[in-house]
Length: 384
Ligand SMILES: Cc1ncc(COP(=O)(O)O)c(C=O)c1O
View 1 (cartoon, rainbow, N blue to C red):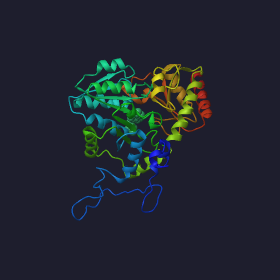
View 2 (cartoon, rainbow, N blue to C red):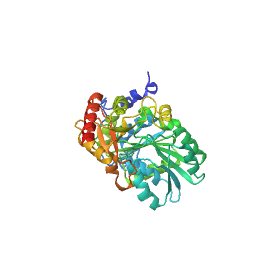
View 3 (cartoon, protein in one colour):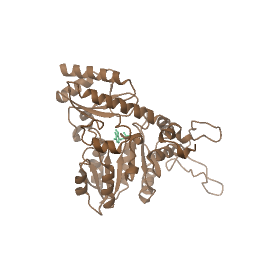
View 4 (cartoon, rainbow, N blue to C red):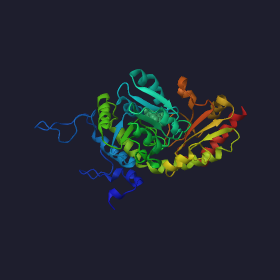
């Protein structure tokens, strides 16, 4: 069976099955060189010049991502933020963009604090409301619709096919932060999106040991070339070792993410019955707003991320988080270890997150252990 027939999990498990030709190595070598020799006749036939432009260490990881997202090309970046902000920096001052009201707070903070003063016109809309998106778009002047689905930290779902249609009718591109869904559950490019973005720091790498980002495009058009130029000129590339680590992490992407999502679903269902829990926010629950759309566009699971709203307000939430033993109190998501976070505390002034909300990133521990540890912490937090 040729590689072109392999399913995505097989492609990921073997990093596309590449073998290093010189030694037969199954795990690729790491080239640490920052520069590459020019041919005597003044050409660069290897295609490699200098690692701010590109790096042999990116080739395999970008090729895997391109295949998993069913795109035309990928670019890895120094962080998820570098990848996300590059999409906006590739626009021109005066251009109009739409972004979600509910969104990873780091991107929202940058849009408000940097992108707007820099000259972009940005309106924030409820991306779960397709009619609101249709009303907010300005045909001819809107150049980008940015969304995130499921979106931090209340997991708002965007109907990607519907919003892609609105974007394209207005002459805009649709870019999707798919960090939480991962290509295991959702491939936005196949639903009409133009660009997919990942904080590769999270599920793609999966081991809480590096910072990286990525963009994948549906077509290698002029906007994509601009994005490549933004990355080169800002120098927002990852190092060779980080690229190698990311490739290694992505080999286990499918079993990790599928396992975490199964545990998250079980936890969400059980936590609904806990007396200290006011609400469970998880797209896999049938009564979650957006569940039907999520079930249509996410195949096989709803991610390892959920949130709970705790009785007793902010104090109850913080007290409950203080009592966990197995869960770790930390920001970030998508690692092997389960994390619990009082989201409003890290988001600060601009936060719109309910103060009683705890965000849960489900890792690879035993799901019953995770429930028992959290249930005991919630009991203790509720008693005090
Ligand atoms: C959904 C989402 N997008 C983007 C980012 C930013 O990525 P990074 O921390 O890799 O810069 C994060 C980080 O938490 C995230 O959760």
